[in-house]
Amino acid sequence: MSQNREQWGSKLGFILAASGSAVGIGNIWKYPHMAGENGGAAFTIVYLACIFVVGLSIVVAEFVIGRKTQLSPVGAFETLAPNTNWKWVGYLGVASAFVILSYYGVVGGWILKYIINSISGGFSGLAGNPDAAGDTFNGFITSSYGPLFYQLIFMGLTIFVIIRGVKGGIEKWSKIMMPLIVVLLGVLAVRGMTLEGGMKGISFLFNPRFEDLTASAIVLALGHSFFTVSLGMGTMITYGSYLDKKQNLMNSALWVLFLDTAIAMLAGVAIFTTVFALGANPAEGPGLIFVVLPTVFGQLTGGTIWGTMFFILLFMAALTSAISILEVVTAYFIDQMGWSRKKATIQFGALITVVGAFCSLSYGGGINITGFLGMPFFDVMDYLSSKYMLPIGGMLTAIFILKKWGIGEYMKELKTGMGDADISENLIKVFLIIAATVVAFIIFNEVYFEITGKALIG
Ligand code: PHE
Image (cartoon, rainbow, N blue to C red; front, top):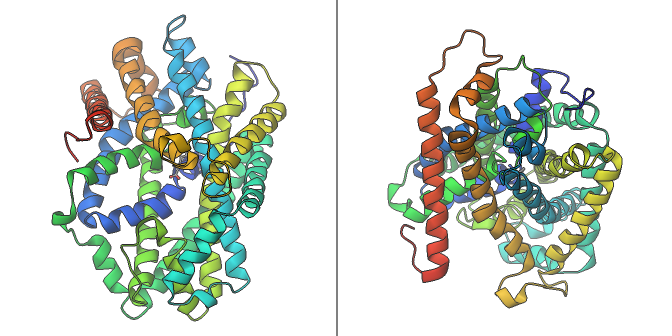
């Protein structure tokens, strides 16, 4: 354990950095369209249950492992279980970081491009015309150089923040960007609610439609709860490793979950009120952000401002998540290989950018190295990480505590910093068992589906 390991400057800084990791494209893009398509509040109830049972157990577990060992995932598992295979859970995390950031950086680039489109008044030509907006979006993402250029800028910014370190980079920028995200989203939500007909968007989002809640929506909610809280790849182990013994880890975890959920819902309100007020199609699915929103911003008075605000806040959310992903890789090379922060960040940031370029080009830019799988390389990376790597990583983390490290030792570290608060060991254990079991079932269900073409549920 190095004596001069970097530390967070304050509790607030840590919470903002960890929730900055959690709040990302998943909250502002994926959650609203998933809820919109899968029963509104009915989906949200299942999602909340997943977050507060499975999600909470794993966030706390990751914080505890990180703070105990003061190391990023590989070193952390190696320290707690020397000379065993458990360190592979850490390597799986580093690999997941590679896989996720490669395509996440591409989407970050798309967002930057949409900020420019909005500022230059490009949305007004798309007003009320989803076909034209769809053509614009598809034309852009299937071209070769444009998306690569913006991806490069986005990744450059990610590298820039990480090089500056834990306090001077991650914490500093999270403290600036997180409050801005909340304020901008709040303004957009109020704007949406005060538009005529905007309240119909609220009932679309918050009225439970149980008939639309299929078994596969339940599976979706569980999978998404890992992605949205950045679980299963050691992000929270790494962030936890920069903490001192004074922090109350349960309390910090609850803050992160609360902010992550609140911001996802606020995004849903901002988006659906505006979409309903202008009579656009709410069930557009993934096209909601890049296709439907430009058509509604184009129609709105002051649409250039609202549109620009929206894409800027989305950009900030994406950036605070991207830095947490790259930090997992950087921290591995610092902790385990003794590299300098600068060298690790630049070399691996660059390598991930190159892998990401193949994701981008797989959408029509000319190179699709996984065409033989019948899927663009971009989709393969998304599929592998969200369906398998994160859930498997999260499940193994829970099993590690139950079977290897031992609940007693785990509780000791968890209770450190909690003062007199009493917390039941049995309850924590039951939560971890539920988390591991539910996730194991979901992974099994997915594999079963791939093999037989039929899912057990969903
Ligand atoms: N939580 C981020 C989002 O919602 C994505 C992410 C996944 C970040 C895994 C870090 C690790 O967009």
